[in-house]
Amino acid sequence: MTVCGVVAEYNPFHMGHAHHLAETRRRLGADTVIVCAMSGNFVQRGDLAVLEKYRRAEAAVRCGADLVLETPLSACLWSASGFALGAVGLLDALGCVTHLSFGAEQADLALLRRAASLCRAAGSHTGALRQALAAGLPYAAAMQRAVSGTDPAAGTLLASPNNTLAVEYLCALDALHSPIQPLAIPRVGGAHDSSAPVCGLPSASLLRGLLAQGELDACRPLMPPPAFAVLARAVGQGEAPVLRRAVDQALLSHLRRLPPDSLVRYCGGDGLEHRLWTAIRDNTAFPAVCTAAQTRRYPLARVRRALLRAWLDLPEAVPPAAGYVRVLAVGARGRAILRRMKTTCALPVIVKPVTERALPDALQPLLAHDALADDLYALAYPDPALHVGGGRYRKTPFCL
Image 1 (spheres, rainbow, N blue to C red):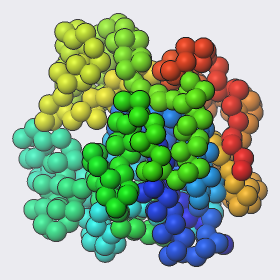
Image 2: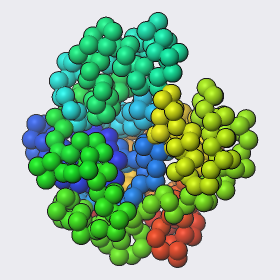
Image 3: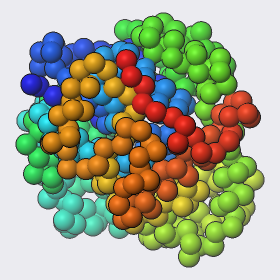
């Protein structure tokens, strides 16, 4: 049986995502089972997901995925390397995934592998990488410069965000000594953060922008009908769109309680904590805090992730590795994989959240962070009646 893993955020699920799943099956076979490792309620760009995780997982299963699992929270608020390691590690731990499919602007697997090899070598802090970091470049840009010095083609490849993630997936597979085989799919449609669809395929940021402006109907032609139906139902029930601005003052109120020596726990300790503390003190809105703290060395996404980690009390020392598998949605073929995982999976599997209370004590801190994150996320629902806590124990996976 071919079981293909996909790392995703589906924030929200759109036509480009549906194309990727269909193309994966075209290449691997129509009976391929697709298992997604999907970000939960917080996403790697340092923001709240526009639609709650069980809803997004439902949309994915209704549009071609067979099983959707939650990527570890810590990985979702990490740089690209930690995000990839956490998600790929989750898929590898299942013990039954044979392939990993990912999109890339340049889906040349040989070149991607070459870039991954050079990134691993440069990651040992070669002279070129150290010089670039000393010049004040953010880590990703410094890595690109170091790789370009050895292989210009590989360095150019790292200028595109999906290429960068593809390289990180390959690095993660290598670090885990995983037998999973990579499959690179050419990315089509709107570019990352583009403001217009290409060939009818949008970027997720375009859809989020439309939702933030209250233009739900404008999303309809850009999403598969089942995914749009899930989104429209959530909007009608006051669950979406979830926008960070709804909790900006709650965020800022918490952050102002933290001195620099506390902030260092959440941002890595390379001086960013001092910029964060000054920005938190001197600004009156969360976006302004982020803008004030951002520099060439500290990119905006890193700033936002650090501030969200502080709000969630999730120290950077918490590793991105999965401690358990949380099921968010399952289809007919996914049920067969769940049964198979009983003998192949190296981690505890949580289907009904109430069962997590019986998991080992060592896992309870991670579970507590998950529960807190979900409760804080609930504060951003459009309907104030939904701001109650404890949602973790009231929700169960969507079953198709």
